[in-house]
Amino acid sequence: MYKVKKKFRDKDTNKMHQPGDSYSTNNEREEKKLLNAGYITKQGKQMEAATMPDNTEKKADIKHLGGGWYQLPDGRKVRKSELQEGD
Image (cartoon, rainbow, N blue to C red; front, side, top):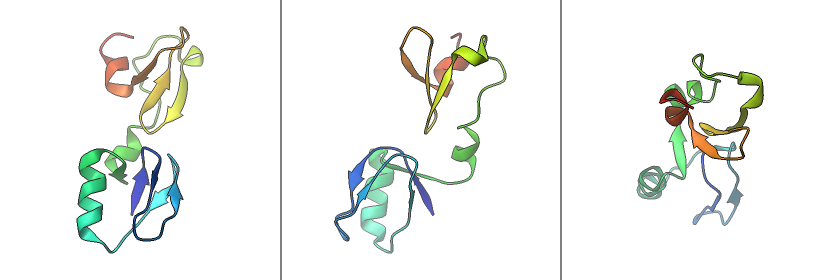
């Protein structure tokens, strides 16, 4: 089972998948393409990354957008790894 990171249309089913949706497929070739392109991520360790980092200042001012993305008070959108580097 995978978690959708970026919006895409499934080539096999023609269904649109939105960020945050769960995704599964039996098409290994398409699965690898979506993983490599960053459209989906494996559930598990990546899901832990969606939690608010402990070392951020003003946690209440930082909005979690999903998929490891956060919106800072100044409107910038950053990944969790960027928050840990000093934001």
